[in-house]
Length: 112
Image (cartoon, rainbow, N blue to C red):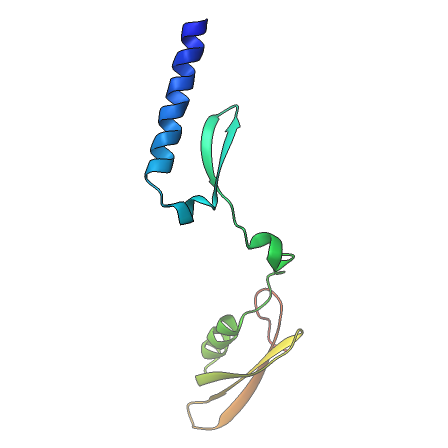
């Protein structure tokens, strides 16, 4: 029994040494070793996750609003206003006329 425990301890030390040996000290701060039923595994911790607050609710980004406006036929699309409820973009039509479109700040960017 003692031989099995010694072998397991030696294997764990070699594994931990190979993980730490290949990393610099600065990058090692974001790694956590978890020991569980699946053995020892390194886990990357996202340290900023706790400071950022709740995750975003998946609204429409400015990039998605510009892409939706291009799909509707506008050219040279620019975002001119962003509010918690809507995103307003402006662009030119084929005939050179400037047009404004509003999209809801929700997933999928529905047009208002």
